[in-house]
Amino acid sequence: MAYILVVDDEKNIVKGIKFSLEQDGMQVDTAYDGEEAMELVHKNSYDLIILDVMLPKIEGTEICQQIREFSAVPVVMVTAKGDDMDKIMGLEYGADDYITKPFNILELKARIKAILRRAAKDKAPVSSNILTVRDLTIDMDARQATVLTHEVVLTAKEYDLLEYMAKTPGRVYTREVLLTKIWGDNSGDVRTVDVHVRRLREKIEENPSDPKYIFTKWGVGYYFR
Image 1 (tube, helix red, strand yellow):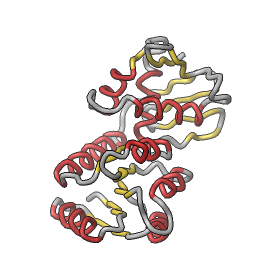
Image 2 (cartoon, helix red, strand yellow; image 1 turned 90 degrees about the vertical axis):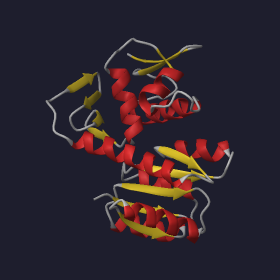
Image 3 (cartoon, helix red, strand yellow; image 1 turned 60 degrees about the vertical axis):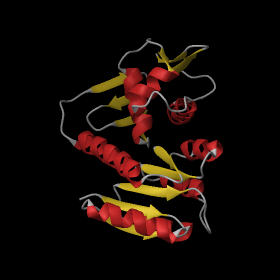
């Protein structure tokens, strides 16, 4: 049974999401402002968090950033209609996905279930598979990356992107291909890929502006070396 936290200051939206998810057998906690949300996140171990961008006391992007300092729990940001900056900022601060208001509850549930399925698959035991490149080690069984002896806290999408490119070093992938392979949607915003590559570099590169793992092929896309 999945354990979900829903954070939004619009009580009718929270009530609707909670009811719909509970109908599918999920356990749901709710919060209506940023401070209450952070208290619950520190207290409980959630499988996924649905987080509105605009919240009283602490904004959703700041909450997401704080969560990423200690947890890789999947976060779905809820943004205002047509506000691309909210979407980009959410991804910048570590969100795994976003959905725009007003949204169809069936679409939200489909996204949640897809993320939870991937998470369950990630936890399934598989044969040992470790890739080491200079100071970077990628443990594909544990879905974990370390630089020297320090574990790097990656979101699910950040890890998927790293592993996918690392498995085929030297192969250049366009942003459109990466969007399709990692997000399963070739109609999305390719800036999503740019944001995740930038965050990956910040986490695994000694000098993100002079990378030694993830490179840019100007005018084409990205590759791992």
